[in-house]
Image (cartoon, rainbow, N blue to C red):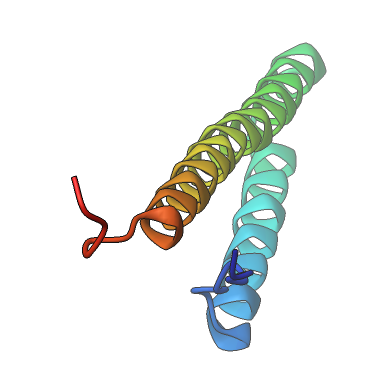
Length: 95
């Protein structure tokens, strides 16, 4: 059975851009909430809503990644079984 490593599809530049974009979005939203002309309780509510949204987004991303990785593992097990069957099969064996 051959070990085929899982290939990383994202480049370092893509990863850096995603992290930078997330940081800019959080900072801009935080500044917007603090500059908002509203009562303190309204700004606090919006801050908690943003925090909830960010944590929910991370959880959703983790669930999607876990499901995709589980699919890869099942696919690799099926591939290993197929390779074993093909290796054991002799097409010239007399019936």
